[in-house]
Each structure stands twice: as structure tokens, then as C-alpha cells.
Image (tube, rainbow, N blue to C red):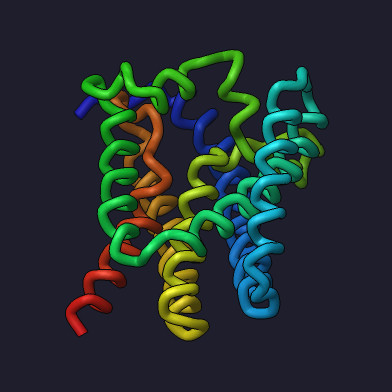
Length: 225
């Protein structure tokens, strides 16, 4: 396989070394926030209202023009909205529906990173200079203070839906297993990226594969037993 140039590898390595740190931090903060929310808040109407409000706020923010630091601040607000919306949706999904849904999302995500899927909505958004910056969650660089790209809102949305649905159906213990599966899946993704980014064909990696893949295995095990 053909490798990228030394400069390309060096540039990506520098960017990835900081990006993966923020991805890990955000994932743990996401996990703590959602597990705490579902453990202490049990009123359906509150989740439904928060879900509706989050959609309105999210749309208002991503349609605004922003640059630099504003992207970072807006992304955190939008991430909270995505989490609220994902939990509200996940609590309403029957667990029997969840497995085919996350398999479909994972497969579609993989396809969108290939030539075959270049016309999918996800691929078009990833290639859009207008919309891609608005659909990403940013960390704050510990070195320069500038925004650091992490994941897309869609990834966190499906993490939240999957976790909320499993937690609602099976309770705290299995919910904790599910959230640990998502965290481990994120780490597996980062390990894979670290192995393959040097190759010329690398253009990105679907963030749902590891987390939703492990949740798929968890659901299959739960169905069997």
C-alpha cells in the first residue's frame, strides 16, 4: 500500500495527537452526564420538553454564522442539545427496534466513507465547506487555545439514542455496560485510526463503528440469554 508523504504524516500526527485527547475527554464527560441524568431524572415529560427545546435551539445555532472561538462555544451548546434530543428519542424506542437501527446506521456510516457512498447525505455534508464546520464538536487546544476538531453531532446523537434505549429497557447495570461499551468503542476507533492514517487511501474513519458495533454485540448477547 502507498504511504503518504513524510510531511503529510507529520502534520496529521500532530493534529491527531491533540484531537484524540479531546475526543477521549468529551466522551467521558458525555458518559458521566448522560448516566447521571438517566439515573436521577425519571419524568418522561421533562425529557420530551427538553428534546423539543433542544431541536429548536440546535437549529437556531447551526444556522448562524460563526468563526474561530464561536465554533467551539456553539458546538458545546449544540452537543448538549444533541444529547437531550438523543435521550428523549432513545427512551421512546422499543429495544426490538434498536438493533436493526444501529446496524443500519453503522453500515451507512461505513459506506459514506467509500467511493460507493460519495452521494449519500453524510458524505455530502462531510465534503461541504459550508456545513461541515457547523456540524462538528470542538475542543479547546491546550497549546494554542484554538478550536480542535473532535466528532460530529450525528455520532453523539446515536451514542445517546443507543445508550438511553438500552438503559430504559434493561436498567442501571446493563446501562453502565452499554456506556462502557461505547467508551471502549471510541478507544478502539482511535487505535485503528492510529494504525491506518499513514496510508494514502485514508480519508477518515466512521465514528459509529466501534461504539455501536460493541452495543450490537451486547444486544445480541442480551437477546440470547
